[in-house]
Length: 368
Image (tube, rainbow, N blue to C red; front, side, top):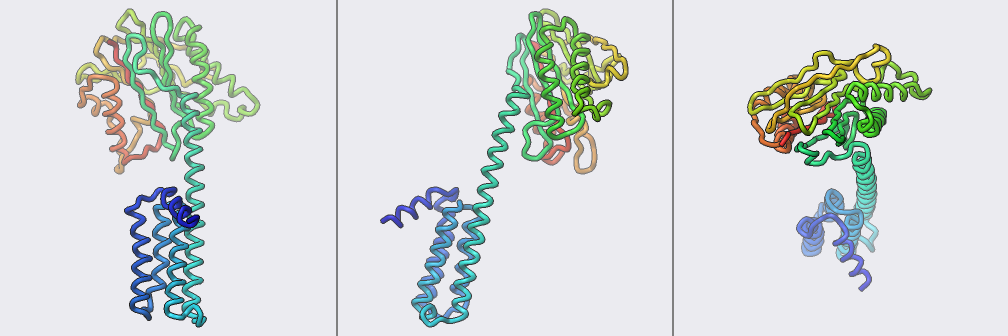
């Protein structure tokens, strides 16, 4: 009774369905019955090795061990029936040893695989928590603006990289930032978190966009002044676009710090909003004595504003061709930020074959 309960628990603890488990179980039963009814088949007992090896490909460690035990029990039954076990036949003994060795190996490998899967799930959970803290999801509505965002990390199994975005409500409107940290990995994530923290802390206090841009540049430079970061001075920088979208006027005020220009979609007309006097990337302002110029553009109700990082426009297909963002957006005519982001995500991943070489971030904004 205890053995029956244990085997029932094995069957229900794994990831395998009853339909898939029927294959190794049926294989063991068929081999044992065939060998008992037709003794002397040369390959019968040897084929029992297939059952645990097959089970390990889809079932849990417990189920794999149970199937391996059944396979060993099956070969013992065959040996008793044919007299090989009591007679001490060398060939049959070798078959038992081989089956035991393979069963142990596949069960151990299945255990290692499950442990790796648990560790990966834990790392992914931590990554998701980090993403929620560092790169907070943008709400679907901010004041009179409808918003949609997208983040695609290039690093395998990562949810967060060196691209960044954030939005802050002020007393007169909404301030946005989108940026791209030079480099990848944990250093890029750390620099992105630093800039986002500085933006969220200062966006309310700094009266003008030039003041805010200068403050963010000083924050990046202060971080590089730390002794642990001193060797990176002049080598680490963050491209960014900082925008102020007032509630009362159909305008966009923008300071560009070495960042790709956003696109304005008005029907099927797509316009790149180039800065007249772009500033150097954040972190280089003190080295270049940068000044920050504000450019103003119109954003009428119904217009769509698309902010993006260079991971979008520098994405290459199998032939090495860059992603034609302006041409693709002009052909879609989306009616909402979420529709635009959905089209862009699907088309971008199709262009690169499902895997980006660089992080990509996108914000779509529409004024009601």
